[in-house]
Length: 266
Image (cartoon, rainbow, N blue to C red; front, side, top):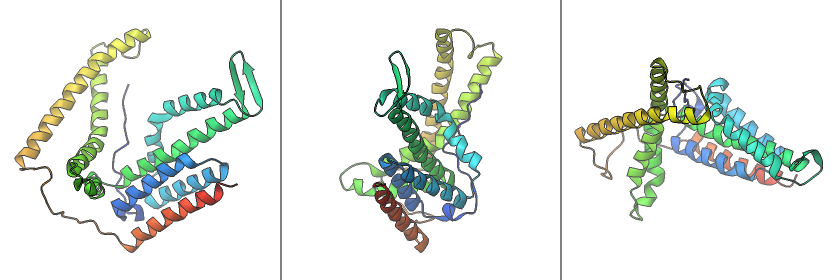
């Protein structure tokens, strides 16, 4: 059973979104993620999806590539929909079977909460698809730099975040290779009862943990060989600069928030 994780993989292209300042893109992503939880009606939801569709078109990223990033979360979306479908009991009753009741409010909550969560996931996927790991590291470092005044290790936190995003697809590929090797040796990962399947996953997790430690050890040696010192002042080969288009992007983020506020009364 292959494991394909596309979240975190950079998609090279020549587009306005790729050329934008990564700090602006990160702030725009945070705006989309935070404001999606304030979506309450159809018109706000339509505005959010219109913005997402426009960003995908501007980024010149195939829609299938973006949807592949959402696909691993489909099970979570389905569980979330079922929970909201049966938990909310307001409105008219549409269907009843014993203790389970489906109402109009539950149906709307199941649709609304799931679709607005898709906006957040796609926004994060677009940021990762259009921003290189080096740019993300510089962005985290720049945005977290005010924390250094409070004595917090801002640069080290930025390094951890960037490395985490870098190794997500790597560990996914290694998990796929380990599972294929287990299957070739006769390990039935997808057969038997549920307890048997859970026990079969144990060797895979042990091998994946050992591989992760090997990568961490190699990374530590590479940083030590390059005389890396956390928190040391250093310059950048490509310093971050905000251009007019980046300020325009921030202005559009403010306009999007204002539009959501205006549509809230509908």
